[in-house]
Amino acid sequence: MSSRARLWSIYGEAWGWPPATMTSEQDRGDLQRHADEIETHESFNFALFDGNETELIGCVYIDPTDKPGADADISWWVRDEYVGSEVEAALNAFVPTWIATGWPLTAPRYVGRDLSWAEWIAIPSE
Image (cartoon, rainbow, N blue to C red; front, side):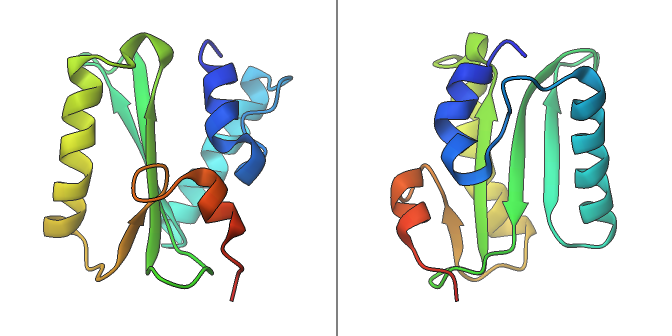
């Protein structure tokens, strides 16, 4: 996992992801868990691929929250080689617009954007 160190700096404290020893099999299991959550409408995870769908570029997460102040917690990332790129800029512009126009949310919270991950972690669960 080429972007593990940066992703751990973003999600590690909050989710413990991605673990340092994550194998391909464990990654597939994690993806299956996401698929199961999507199937039951518990949360949503969208992968961003290149035009040929052969390269994962990043992911978008839309999760219900048990923390006050929002009806969903939303975050996204791109692989290290796309940080600061036009692709990342396009994703940063796209996600809030997509959520506002395509999702029935009234108070989405963009974790890592509207507030830091440390601030999000500090919000007590309801």
